[in-house]
Length: 142
Image (cartoon, rainbow, N blue to C red; front, side, top):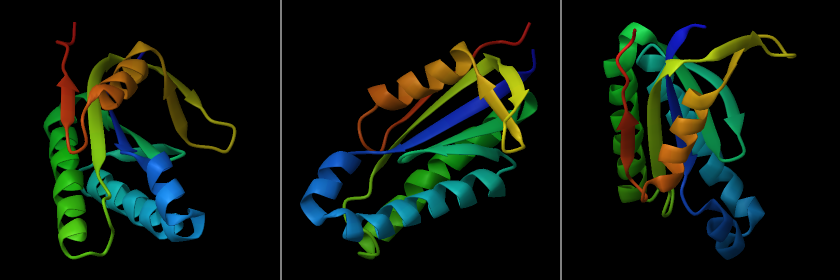
């Protein structure tokens, strides 16, 4: 099983956001959020594995944990700027990062996908965080 750094970024409060602004107005916010996460991840050497509703799952090679952290910081910085410039409204994210051995497989649509406890931990860290938080769990490779 390969050793990977898994990053999960989730749009905070998206259900409430849709309720308050309506789905049509919400679409531009989710689009901007996914653009921001994609740019931050790929510019730091990661791969976007998939989008899960209002979240982004990404993988980094094991030797690029620092780049995953940099990508998480970049996501938060870009969202801060977009909110300050009123390009989006109340668009906040949580990010969870976990490292370890993952189950890697080829997805039906092509490309690699990952499952296992490391992916679960990244998602749980993301869920546990307050808006604008970055939670990181690092394990030593053996």
